[in-house]
Amino acid sequence: MRKLMLALIASACCSAFALNVSAQQADQATADAVIAMVKAQWAAEIKDPTNIAEQMKDASDDYTEFNGDYATRLDGKGMNSRLAEATGKATGKTVAAEMANPKVQVYNGNVAILTYNYVGMTQDKDGKTEPSRAKSTRVYVKKGDKWLLVHANFASDPAPKQ
Image 1 (tube, rainbow, N blue to C red):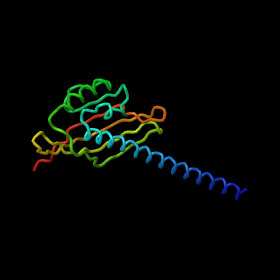
Image 2 (image 1 turned 180 degrees about the vertical axis):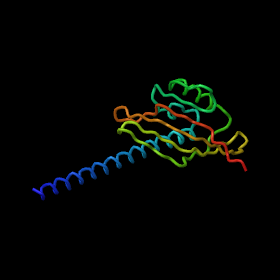
Image 3 (image 1 turned 180 degrees about the horizontal axis):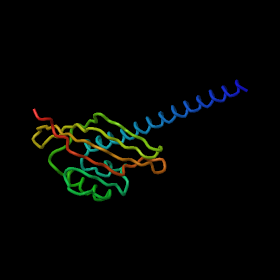
Image 4 (image 1 turned 120 degrees about the vertical axis):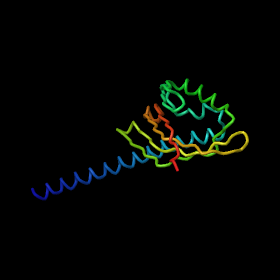
């Protein structure tokens, strides 16, 4: 009886360990997918700042956003796309975009929160470059088999005072 109990306990521990490893692997796959989506969005912006459809392809129709340019929440993929189209006509363009300190938190396998520091370079019409920085949070929800961006918060990240 004692050997049977030990065998059952050992089996339960091994099963729990295997489930934990499996969940960690799924969470890492989600983190990799979410980060790749953001980098693809940036690459699309660098390639063609006017192709908003490509940049917003992973956003949900009910996407919302907070950012430092507006005092209110921006509601809907349509509104955000129209504002992005106007921004895409600006004389400056993004020439480099990187993600520092990314962290993805996955909940129940269908919600992922990505936080990171954005570091990039913009170039004006005369060729002068300027660094750009931001603190960012993006929230993704899995709908069916696709991850969709449902909310983002982009805040300024001023350079430290010297």
